[in-house]
Amino acid sequence: MKQINAQELKNMLAQQQPVMLIDVREPFEHETFNIGGKLIPLGDVLQQSAEIPFDQPVIVYCQKGVRSQLAIQRLEEKFGYTNLINLSGGVSEW
Image (cartoon, rainbow, N blue to C red; front, side, top):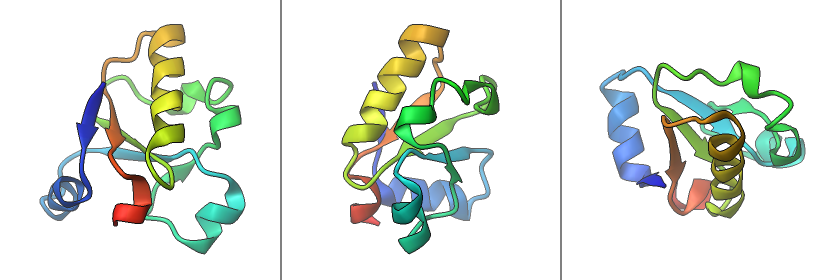
């Protein structure tokens, strides 16, 4: 599984590289603090997979990086994604 740390992601965003951010936390967590990602809670990620592109890097994140790893595993196994990247340490490292 591909990983990226918070500083690497900040650099990507500063350089305006094409990337999509997916937040797999719960709505209350997203409302408290987010880094601009689209909210698709872990429990809904398979049902909402049509909203996740195959043709650009997609950074998947949660609070600490565990739920995002689960989301990536599920999406890769079920739909064959190869462009998903886990934010190591999650937003707690932001």
